[in-house]
Image 1 (cartoon, chains in turn cyan, brown):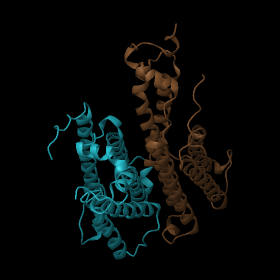
Image 2 (image 1 turned 120 degrees about the horizontal axis):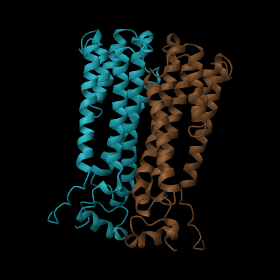
Image 3 (image 1 turned 30 degrees about the vertical axis):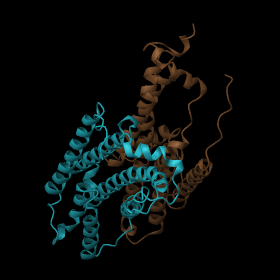
Image 4 (image 1 turned 180 degrees about the vertical axis):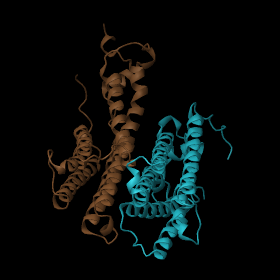
Length: 220
Length: 220
């Protein structure tokens, strides 16, 4: 569609995005350092399978989330550890199920051609709010996982500031900092993408559209 | 100041506020039930002093925060437990210090008569973002505290779904639900208070105000 060129990126946005990516890479490296240096590394068919869980959860909070959840259940079955008893597991599973719901609702509202403009525009703010809230819940679940892992493995030396504990706490602080920067970038009003020409036209025509008008059918 | 009556409350807002308050009261009651039923209750000059910490943190995340922090340091000193080694303590202390900073900045920008309108309006979105982010960080710190307390006290029976573990996990889920509802109420665009008459007038006069004009001095 022809139209005016997209507006230039707002001042400051690039720097914040760069900081968020730098923080993201740093926390991935810190996760790798912790698992590699102190927890024996990562492998699927071995007693190290558990370590796939935090690695996948932190590495790919979106696209590797499924693998991370499978790893912890298989590891628990091998070691006869019960599932889903801890607050970490409850929060992690809630984040996983709610992300799935968010994805299904997103498909239903934004991908199905039969969904009306009016429904889409009413759902969009909910989708944005829950996307950010679930991101925060994922970070909280990571923090709980770090605390569990430390209390299971180095309970006695943790209170003597064992290097592993300090490293893992630092990872937790990096996760919080990452969440703060990403949350700031996502919610700052003047960094939101301005509506496209066709969206503006749509919102002006909004009151004349019927509830069941479809995007593909409006000009036919 | 005379002016038009304030606009009516938006539809739905009261119901959400009611739900948030109901969730808040429920989580306070659940905290009380956990500490009273399983952890021996709460008392300051006794080995139960530690229990003042989660109670104060959850009961009054704002006005009792100070008491909650003092209680944990005194309790640790009495029992010769080191301070500030856990991720829970790092996140809790970060939330406390950043809240203090937020409070000081809030006083400086909004209470000092000499702060210009322009500075105030540029700081306000930051104040709102960090207020919500620190609320989320406080909830994450509570979740970490719950996990620590369970792994210190009922480590072996936790994985067998001991009633205390299920109750405390439920408290964690209530904290998350409370955060979600409050966060939703705070961020929904059409539930934001519309600008008052004097604020509208100010924003219209905005470009004619100098950077160092003060609210009290503009009409003198």
